[in-house]
Figure 1 (cartoon, rainbow, N blue to C red):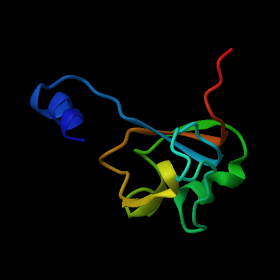
Figure 2 (cartoon, rainbow, N blue to C red):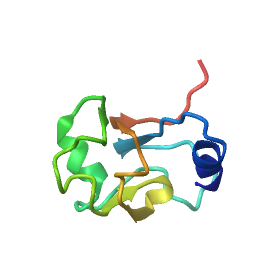
Figure 3 (cartoon, one colour):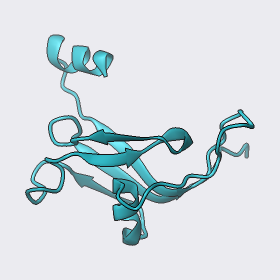
Length: 105
């Protein structure tokens, strides 16, 4: 986050921050002893968005009060979660209901 802050605030570059959040699927990480299938707690933002069921991008600014101006548990790599208040840090969220490992085509 320090590089982003430096570019957006200290260098005064216009910046637009998008977080990709997904509900389920697998990743292509190479370590056999780490989980590859995502499984996030029911109280996570990932699980809360899952019923949308389709890809969607929405702005954080202007969201109903209490939605993004409070901490949410957000799932990320290796099924880890972090509590984060998205308002003021993220401009938009790209939600994907399902992700899959990279595939060579």
